[in-house]
Amino acid sequence: MRKPPPKKPKRPAVTPEEQAMFLAALDGVTPLGARDRIALPPAPPSVVKVVTLPPTVKLAVEGNGQQYTARAPGVSLSQVAELRSGRVRFDKTLDLHGELVEPALAHLREFLFQASREGWRTILVIHGKGLHSEHGAPLREAVHHELLGACSGFVHALATAAPSDGGEGATCVVLRGGR
Image (cartoon, rainbow, N blue to C red; front, side, top):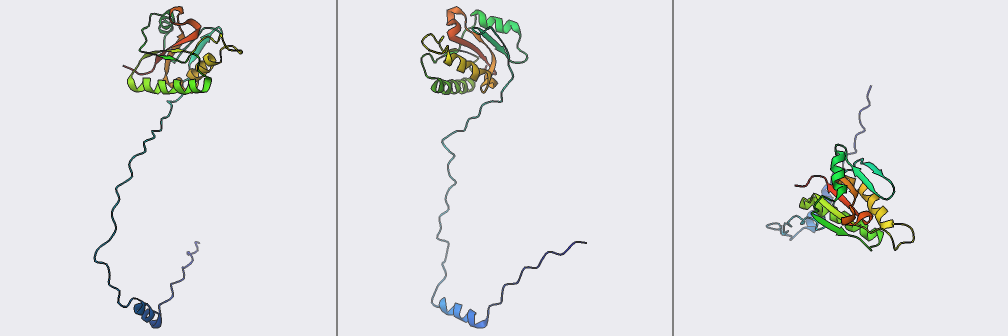
């Protein structure tokens, strides 16, 4: 059997003396004729736009340590071969050569968002071969890690560029969507 909820105590009644004191305090006061408040318009939307990365996609990666190819599910090997051959015309090129890793990755993300908005289909990312670095090619590895990881939702296929486009110092990327 259920217990009834506890009853809230009632507010004590105002005594006639208290009511008289209240009315005496308000003696000579006239009520306002209308509200004196101004209605504020709603706040404008924030200027800062929050942009989120598309969901990551598991790409099939092949490579020998120097040259890489990666493709999303459903992309044929012939499409990747065409990309690697250098017969692709690029809509835009991003040159990160000589930049530090963190600012370069920020530029890469911005560039991918812009490419998505503008409908670019193929891009060339120049990252350099790492010849002037003490530890291999940190920028190239960071760009590949970003394209295969957090930004993989943008990528339809990618391949190390043909020698005429920069070879191991550049990566050709075919983006999802586009025109």
